[in-house]
Structures are given as structure tokens and as C-alpha cells.
Image 1 (cartoon, rainbow, N blue to C red):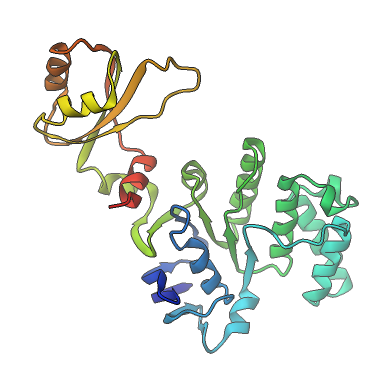
Image 2: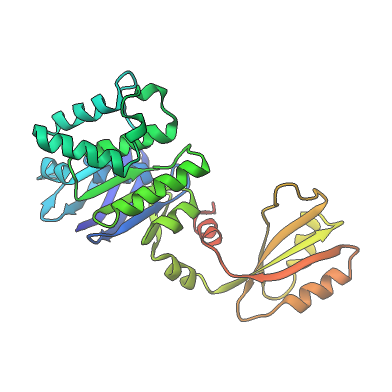
Length: 315
């Protein structure tokens, strides 16, 4: 449905997107993952025709972005990170205004507004000013705007940015419901969000796609190393690195996430090890030679977070 080849965008001397290639199939939910400044928003703006690429091609169905920009835009609904809403208007009036711009006739307009109000959970706020709504409801109004013309493809830039956990779950469920009928492309840096919502993930870093595939496929492709998490008392990170990095098979040692409310005197670290070598015994013996107190040692499976961190870490 969408074919992108050699897509590149320069801002003067800065290369924001660097010769990327990918295809998106009809009915697929593609998550574009990457750290801030990786090139996600620039990529989406080129896909939707808001930015002209420096080079490369974008094909949507039988159209190209250079020769048929209006035809492609008619196939798309676009929700930018900050939805451009008129805050003084009532929700119903705003959606009616959008429907008029889209040239829907009266019966079609009323039917479409009713459908989108149900889909996006807007019935309770239809007669409230947009400026008085929570950010979650404003995002829903923006989503209804993007869906007004019943587009075949929906493009969303950070659709859950700034929302609380309950609002994130609600928007996620709406996206899943829309994804039963539409092709969806969304950008995010929230890994759990992408894993729960998307059929396929493309990780972009410094303008390049560094991984592309289903979540499980990405995990399997990164299976060349194992992870061991240890928790220690009376230890500091530099000493742990110095003592354990010399163990044959240990390739990296980084701090692990501390749970909220845990004792600050407990050090959590994650060791990346060659998968063909079981170094747990060597780690235990090394720790016995010190005055550290071992509280925890267990082997972990690689998560999407580990894969993302490895692929986007600064060299």
C-alpha cells in the first residue's frame, strides 16, 4: 500500500532522515520508534505531504507524492503531536466545521459525527468548549478530526504524548479499534505503547532505520546475548564494573532500573553476556572475593527496552 525508497531530508547541512526504505501493507499498524530528534516527525511529515523530501520517493497505492500530492492527501488522515484545534469552539461545532471543509453532505455529516463521537468517546463533551477539555479529550477531538473523511490511512505523531496512564489506555483501545479497518502509522518513544498497539515496529536513530520487524522477530534477532541482573549492597557502580568486566563472556555492565521506594544503598546492575557462555558461577565467585552482599542474581530475557537502548545508544 505504501512504498518508501531512499527517503532523505536535509535541513541545510543537517541530515534529519537518511536514505530510508520501508513498505507498509494494507491493514497494518506500524510503529515508528526512536529517541527525540531521531527523524520520526520529519518522516511522517514527508509521508503526509507537509514536507518535500530532499530526495527519494513515496508511493501510496498508484500515486507518487511528487506527481499526485492531493490524491495522496485525500487517502490520509493526519494527527500531529499537538492537534491544531480551535479552543473557543464547542466540540460539536468544531467537528461540523471540519465536516463542511471535507464537503460532506448534511446526512453524511450527521452520520459521521455521530459515529466518531461514539468511536472516540466524545458524547459527554459534545457541547463543551474545546479549551475546557482535558488533554486526553482534546486528543480524541483531534483524532475525530483526522478520521472525518474516513481515510484509508491514518498517520499519528506521538498520539499519547502528555496523557496520563488511564488516557493512554483509552487512546490505545481506540487505535486498536480503528486498526481493524485502517492502515495506521504512528510514532512514539513509549516502548510499552508500541509493543501493545503495533503489528510491526521500525526503530529509527539518527535518521536511519536500524531495525524493522514484528516485536517477537526483533527480540529473536537480538538473541546473540543474554542478560543477568544482580542486586548488591556495599557496592558502587565503578567498582562493580572494574571487578566483573574482566570475566570472560561479560561484554557490558549498565545500571538497572530501581523500583520506586527501594533502598538507595542497593545497587542494581544488568550485565550483557555472550549467550554461549554461562557466567553466573564466575560472577558469584567474584562477588565472594569482595565485601559486597549479593541480594539477587537472575538471568533475564531481552526486552524491547534493551533492544531499543542498544540500537539507539550514542557511539
